[in-house]
Length: 122
Length: 163
Image 1 (tube, each protein chain N blue to C red):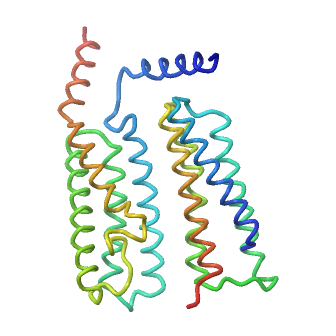
Image 2 (image 1 turned 45 degrees about the horizontal axis):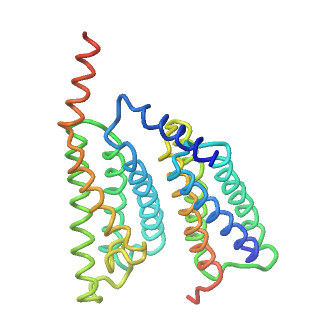
């Protein structure tokens, strides 16, 4: 995991989450903007997969459990597509809020992944 | 000012487009989404615990796995319609609420009992207390949306269909 990239990714996920929740509460059905923000979150997650696979080869090893890290990353990858799928099926304002909830869930998982990678002593 | 004009048009549109509504409509869908995320989190963690260190605490990790399965069933039961799923939703939510209360109290009073984390230790502190709040919200939602009401609306629909 590359630290600055993680922070950029975390900021994007939080921003996308807040944006979608605000749009949803404002009564907007899912739009290109709200769906697009989740697509961006997913693309960054895919980049994170590549980074996480490549990083150990350059001496950047996780301090925590690599399997736990992988399970978080795999689970996080499932969230944006599921939220977007939901938003395509159900075009109500609450789907926009669901998109936001998904993005914030990814943000929490990213932060947890960062902890597993860097700050675990055991 | 011109923005607010657009806004009212939007919300009026979404308010009128609800002739037939499943049980989990409106804010309830957000509840289902959070449930799905929690089910994912619990499943991921329990998979990890059982795969890597099951021998350390078989009881706690079996409990984690059970909780994960119940969260998945609860998510499905909240989405599905009908009387049976309504009962299943009640049963799973009550199970979770009991679980988080009992394990929460036990883990606070006697931490030795649960030396390893479960979803429910310390009332779900590791999950921002979502495991404590969510079943309560869910049961409140279920109490407000009995299947009788939805059966009545679907009955209405069939009647209008027949007529």
